[in-house]
Amino acid sequence: MSNAHVTVHTEAAIGRIEPEVHGHFSEHLGRCVYDGLWSDDTADTDGFRDDVVDLLADLEIPVLRWPGGCFADDYHWEDGVGPREERPRRRNLFWAQGIEEDPEESNAFGTDEFLQLCERVGTEPYLAANVGSGDPQEAADWVEYCNYEGDTELADRRRANGHEDGYGVRYWGLGNENWGCGGRMSPEQYAREYRRFATYVGSMDDLMLDEDLELIACGFENHEWNRLFMEEVGEAEWGVEFPLDHLTLHHYYGRTMNVDEAGEEGYDQMLVEALEMDRHIERIAAAIDAVATTRDIGVIIDEWGTWHPEAVASNGLEQPGTVFDALSAAAVLDVFNHHSDVMTMSNIAQTVNVLQCLVETDGDDAWARPTYRVFDLYAPHKGNESVRTSLETPTRDVGEDDLPLVGASASVDDTETFLTLTNLDCRAAHTVDVGLEGIDLGEASIDAEVLFAGQDPDTEVDAGNADSFAAEELDVATDGDGLSADLEPATVAGITIR
Ligand code: AHR
Image (cartoon, rainbow, N blue to C red; front, side, top):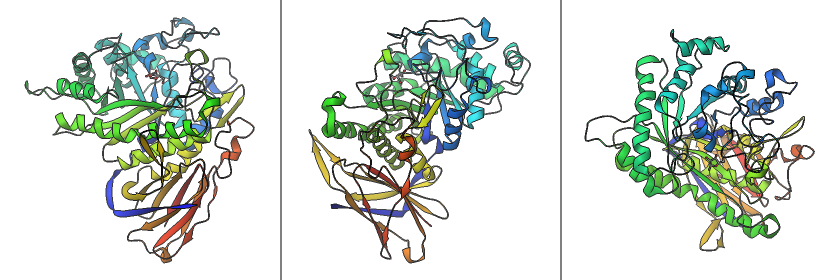
């Protein structure tokens, strides 16, 4: 067992960990919405799956993005409001391939269903408006339908559809992957489109609504694209301020090999790719800073997580949920904590049944995947001040990269320090020695939990074994100004010091 050393610099604040950094994303794709969140033939309340709603409510998910993804830029919101039997069936352009059973979009789940789902879960909605095949009028009308309290046809339509008060939707995405499925635009072209959309949606905010809208542009993993977008969208020479509150990108990663060939090497490779999140956040923040020196524009990663070879469009992008995936989520949440000075939100893809979902369903069963356990363990970080950690860790050569085998992040509030530690090594245990600057452990009480100890990290979770992935107590040794924990292979720990 080799040792890693972590120092927690409790006075070196990075920034608040916005609770929205633990956000989620649901798309009209496979069994995420229909079957996963809602079903028109379910016995549950108004079609909502109570079991899934309860799991998401228990986790206190802060924000949920909808309706896509690629689906968003082919979606016309008016198709999905009003009496259900009158709503048109449409193609599902991007996500119907190879799905024989119900490949089309019934529009049975639309804006009011989504916003009521958010109310039931107790989460904030984030709507993605159609820039690719839509127009600014449609986007501004959607804002009016959802939020306006006055006496207009659209506000009255919302009332007639059962919601007297405006929903107060704050987060509005203007486009999704507009470099790809959202219109294959150049950065300059998207910037011009963005400005047009933001003018009308942003004016709704200034002139008509009580709440401040937060407008979100979709960037790219290519940072030259982001730089060109920011230059164009931020053109200051006419003296016009541009309404842009957040810039996003998407980062997926997975085993490059299929499940039989992948083994431990495939897993190590995947973790290296997951940790590239660090570089992406630095570079997108630099693209923002190069242009927007006078106002705050946050970084959002509004799609992220594992995407393995098993997930193909014809099976609705479903893939097994394992501890391997959950560890990559822990590693990425640590990266977000390290960048809490710029991170304003993230949305793991995709809440239920699809890709790295947190909840899986099969018929009447619904259960938490190991990734859900990680979000639950990390929950005390939400709203805390992230503080710097220094780390000395054993590494493994993975191609041209070094994989750090131990990870850490820490945060503080008025009464406690919360520390998360990951042993990303699926082959060996590691002892982690932790120094806590400014804390006298003689006076402190310590609670520690660990996930996945003794589990085979490749075991697939199902309804029968889901409970076995719950957190267990972890033994921690203390010696006055430090503590030490033995972490079994492929485990995640949460330690609270009060
Ligand atoms: O999450 C699945 C797809 O991945 C989304 O529709 C798209 O935005 C991304 O490419």
